[in-house]
Image (tube, rainbow, N blue to C red; front, side, top):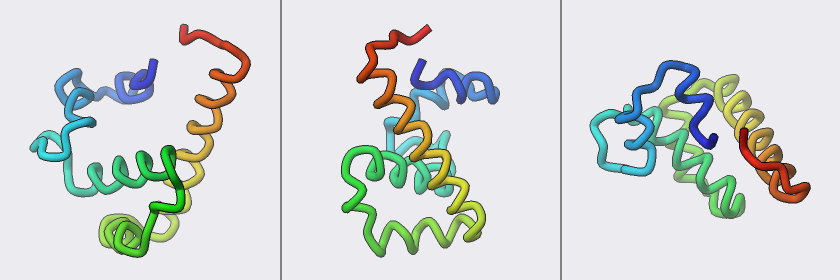
Amino acid sequence: MRYAGARHAGATEAKIAAIDDESSDLLTPRERAAIRFADKLAVDHHKVDDALWAELRSHFSEADIIELVAHTTLFIGFGRFNEIVGLEPA
């Protein structure tokens, strides 16, 4: 369920497995920056520091960053909602 969107977008199982591997050559530096951002945002948004913002800005436009923040927070919220109300993944 966690990676259903990635599968739907055509990501291979190898690339999905690489999401948790910072050293994987299957992920671009841009993808790694986005994943680091999403992970920090989900766990402790206070740890999204100036260095991470600078890294994001080196790979994404301001509009892209706004979209990344919006989508990430939306899906974090969906996950928490599902947990609170006890919905099981389909």
